[in-house]
Length: 301
Ligand code: BEZ
Ligand code: FE
Image (cartoon, rainbow, N blue to C red; front, side, top):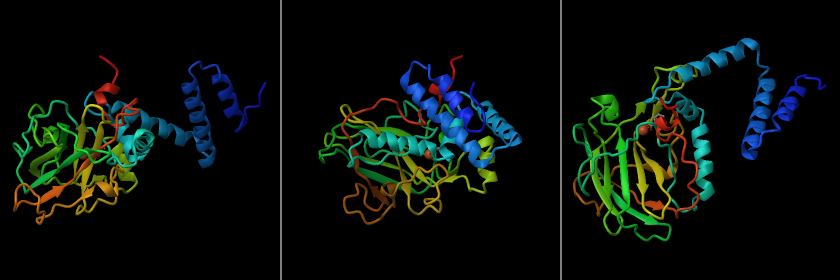
């Protein structure tokens, strides 16, 4: 009989779970119990505080719907999504590939196809910009006909799903690069926006006196056969929140500024951004990414 004091309880749980046949599950659950118990000892967690924690996690679960994944949002604001994605990326990504960023909850399949040079702003208005560049492999060779999905907020900081009837897609589009991997599209400059603050995660962020904002950005997903799918975003350097993103998506290499003086801009006189995307070879793609389509995480029915 083991003495279940503050340290003995950890060993007892791990011993009982040692029968888990799946080795990876055993490894993960052992480490989870060790770290959870160490956390409780570290902060000297009281029963009242733990009950509050349980009430919070219950509220997070209850806020989830087929269209809203509050647990992913929690993982985002705690920096866990960024950590898990960065570990995954550095595992199979050659150092020279474009850095990745969070997919976020607003990606939609089957965005309208946009011709090269066309605009993704079908309804929304605002200051127009152009974005152009080339998709290459890690040897600098253009990737012919790479497919690029882009999606962003409008000039009011809203995604189409939030701004109007969700069946109408706007401020998103799918482009097919030319035979040298080049692309070009026009859009409206997005502005930053607040993460959903009307649930328990928003309440947590408020209690921590954090602002809850993401800096203005354009999401990009680049896919081409034989290459690792790239999920990233471009962040506007002139946004006040670029250094304090609530969900930790920004990397320096993804910060951009629209300029009027780009000699190779397809439309002269329109502020432009040139950004080249580098795809890594198709390597270990198992596992997906935190923040993928939330409906995949919901129980059926
Ligand atoms: C987004 O960029 O769309 C996003 C990412 C994480 C949480 C909320 C929104
Ligand atoms: Fe976003």
